[in-house]
Length: 442
Picture 1: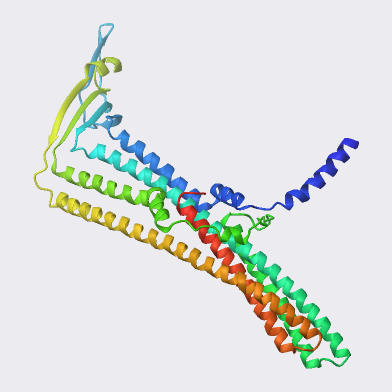
Picture 2: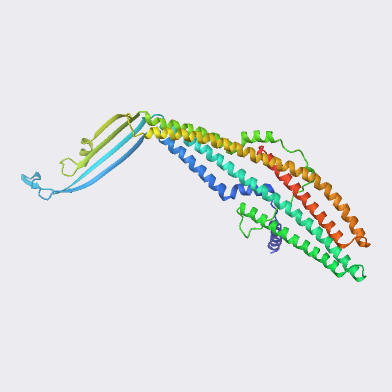
């Protein structure tokens, strides 16, 4: 009994810990790689492509089929039949209903058809490789989106803290204003402005928390978590020094991305696949050589022989070699070749377009990282200056040397500088990480 009580207490102690699990960025990525529906569909497409490869390889082998046909016939005006002698007596039997049976075994093998079958195998293999790269591409896209949502959550989490600190200051200012009203050093109109600023700070906290909840919801949906699953993110320690580190080189990142990104390799495979498609189309001008063979036999109920003897006596074996030479096919092959060449040119243009889009994406991240890093440096200096200025304003306000308008303007300037610093910091971190990700790093 004591053991059961202890086990129950341990279970109750463990459950809150499990419910309070915090998801790191790695946790989110690893979970999404297993449960995201888009990624699962891409993996199913890969499995389908693998089956297509097996099917095309099977087309290189001979085919073998067996068939049988059983039929019944009726001859209503039949007047002659089979005569048998039994104990010196002649008996005649007329069968108006009879049965036929045929049994066939056929084999066929395409010896050569201009290399079409082997090129079909090669093209299906390329399609399988493209499907595999598509899985990697979808995984990269999901990982990139998770990173963006995660960093946005980090930014808003700190934005809430900044707004809460601002609220505490506003509350202190409001309390100080109430004291000054009581002694006649401030009017009630000025106190109302302090109260309004405190209310605005409360609203800012609610707004930031609402945005944070929305981004967490998007992250939860991307992970395919259920609505009743407990979800919260782990807040890693981030510093301004991390955001002020060296930004990865634009050109080096682009060159590495060209060599490693799955969408680039998929584009190159599309060009190779278009070349195979052209070879398949040209095979329509070449002869086709086929080998065929068959084994057949039959039975009939009107025969005097039994079923076994008929099966043996009626055996027929045949084999043949056929050559099909195309002469005129209504321009079908020529059209297919022309369309295959167009497809090849389209694949080349698609790859060039993908390379251009890749460079634009990386260049955009690099520019954002560089610009926001400069903004962060300026924002840090601005926060320090605004903080000193506001502290001086508070001291002067407390002794009546500054009015309420000057105090509120100073506080708003400090809050804006703090928000600018946070935004520049996390945008720099995000774009630097994305540059490393495109450069082949986790």
